[in-house]
Image (cartoon, rainbow, N blue to C red):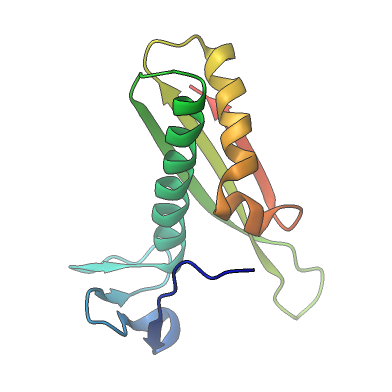
Length: 137
């Protein structure tokens, strides 16, 4: 396997701390889900941002292969689910991907979204590990 890109982000303080990239291009305060603060986010929002951007790029590739020129918009909703049946925490992620492609029917868009799901690196990374839905809207 040939690595084509690598990046490093460092966290201090966990969900009540900060993250910063090694190259200095990213620096953000981190708060637990549900808490708000100026310029702060949480790990789930960061995951949703990365997943939606990556998925939409995969969709752009698929659209190009199918000669589709309509603009696409992709959202990723990331949820935390408590699966614990004991005192030990067992929290898992779930993701809902919704996509719209200008000029296509829902059925046509769904077909392209399914193909994008097969090539998106984030989709591949979570395959068979979390609950994930992909839906044209």
